[in-house]
Image 1: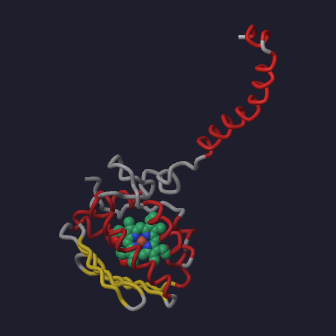
Image 2: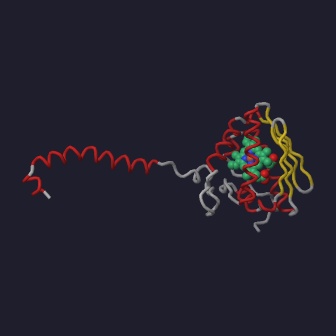
Length: 193
Ligand code: HEM
């Protein structure tokens, strides 16, 4: 290799000019890949991504929405009525932007229940919610300031999961991110079917 340069010192000079920029290009390409944030799938919703059912193109948008709700939790009001086969909930906000995000969130989560593309699998209760999503019926009615949701199931064990989840949403509304960082246990008699 050096014989080339011995006979043509100009080529060696030119190569020296290229080495610096070339090194930077290689370094930046590597740094970009290495610094890429772990796929949205990884944190904080470890295991999101539909558990092997292909890329989760809605994950980032859905996460941004529930982060927005957690950030604005103080402007949300919620009531939960437990009925024999589930819950009737009303979740609203005086802030129109928050009200709209609540509506978006519930519809997005409904789609996830039906498609099985879950999230937050690191939290036992949420894993269970998505395991049984297809056995849940959700009637969503937009109110002027949010949503009224009637969520039911014919399966008594799933009813317990629905009710436990509704309590957790109430905790999210009361405590925001402080609650969202915690794990939530399965309802006591919920089997691991
Ligand atoms: C202040 C924050 C939040 C609000 C106001 C909110 C609101 C709601 C509402 C109104 C429902 C319909 C069922 C019900 O009313 O019980 C719902 C369902 C759901 N939410 Fe949220 N949510 C919040 C945070 C979160 C977070 C942080 C997650 C997960 C990362 C999440 C995941 C879900 C899922 C999976 C469902 C469908 C499961 C089911 O209803 O059984 N939510 N949410």
